[in-house]
Amino acid sequence: MAPKLSLLLLLTMLLCSHSHGVHLKETTMTLYFQDYSAGANATVLPVTGIPGRVWSFFGFGTIFCTDDPITEGLDKNSAQIGRAQGIYVTSALDGSNTHVLISIVFTNEEFSGSTLEIQGTSRQHDAVREVAVVAGTGKFRYARGYATFETVYFDMEISYAIIRCNVTVMHY
Image (tube, rainbow, N blue to C red; front, side, top):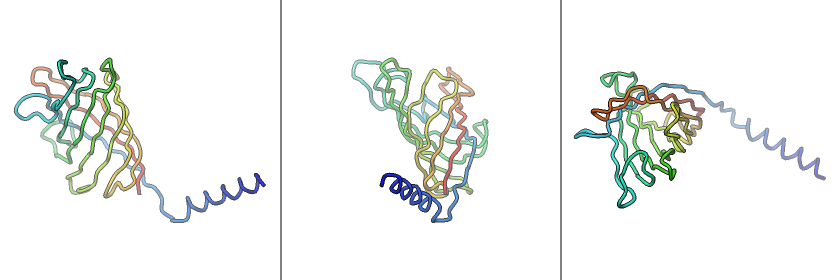
């Protein structure tokens, strides 16, 4: 009985996976987050944290809200293609990890109205941080994949960073 049941389950899985005739597409792209963490035009700010402790990227319990412009090139004056909107939570007691919940909201003509949803642990001390792409909307419906983040420029004096985001997703 068990071999017949196993065969039946295998055949059912094969039929279900091919019954719609829809094939996943792979999309890869490189985006640049223009990140300002101080000043009148800050795009990422701490919104709460543990009372009596310094709120910082390395301070456990600090929660940040972000709305970074995303450009197609490294230069902040290159074409804006979207916004990175969401929250970061410094989630490791030693400040080494941040939990990331980011929506990439596209505003450019090609993907306007579409989003990619990024969620997971970002290891702050790593040069390149990898986080899961867990969903998408519009042209990225049912997206899944990964994104890597790398700080390619940082000006401490004005608290400005450029973060390269390489995204690879499978979607319908």
